[in-house]
Amino acid sequence: MVPPDPLPSFTWNAADYHKSSPAQQLWAQELIAKLRLSGHERVLDIGCGDGKVTAAIAACVPEGSVTGIDNSPEMCRFAREHFLPSTHQNLTFVRMDASHLEFSGKFDVVFSNAALHWIFDHKPLLAGIARCLCPGGRLLVQMGGKGNAAQTFEALEVLLENPRWCQYFDGFSFTFGFFGPEEYRQWLAGAGLEPVRVELIPKDMVYPDREAFAGWIRTTWLPWMARLPEDEQPAFIRALIDEYLALYPAGADGVIHVGMVRLEAEAIKRV
Image 1 (tube, rainbow, N blue to C red):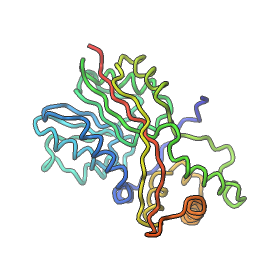
Image 2: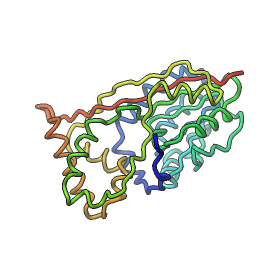
Image 3: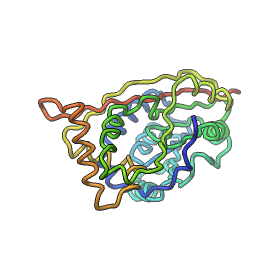
């Protein structure tokens, strides 16, 4: 697989993401339960976003600590403003690039939900995670996997046949890293992380209406939004939803279902 050009920095609307990410929060809650935390662990949350998931982890480790990192200054600022040290004493937010982690042997657990597919090259990422973990420390991550959002990309492909939209995407490279279990097991082992479980998990992302579906596209499809003039973005989102619903109609109740595939990996740092 040929890597794309380096992923540019995008300006995230943290407040919009905060209210438009119920699916990500639900998946995070399911993933946190799989950690089986005892309450004293030191946890690193990679791609902490608006901080709500990181705060939920912190509530599970009252005698431990949680550090949330994100490369977005907007997300880090939002998280710090909404989860204050006065009410979340064991919670810290740091702006940091996950491909260049600056910790060494500091954490018992590394966690990430719905973030790592923003990184195309996972070898340096996993090497950094291995450095972060103490011997015997655990990794549990979930991200977009091979085949993720295939139906949405099908609709996008149809939409980009329209000259109105294709003009903005000349030379566009697919920027996400959607991987399968086989290659990911190899990368984990190569970083000194013993794979315990690596699997693709299908998910049904449910939106009650077009507005909610548009919120997901607006807040997470930033590589595509960045190509468009700002005044064209709402029309593009409406057109993409039209194409999607022509292929995959909403239910009688108006609910929209979006097929997703998540790569979930659990590993232990070798002692």
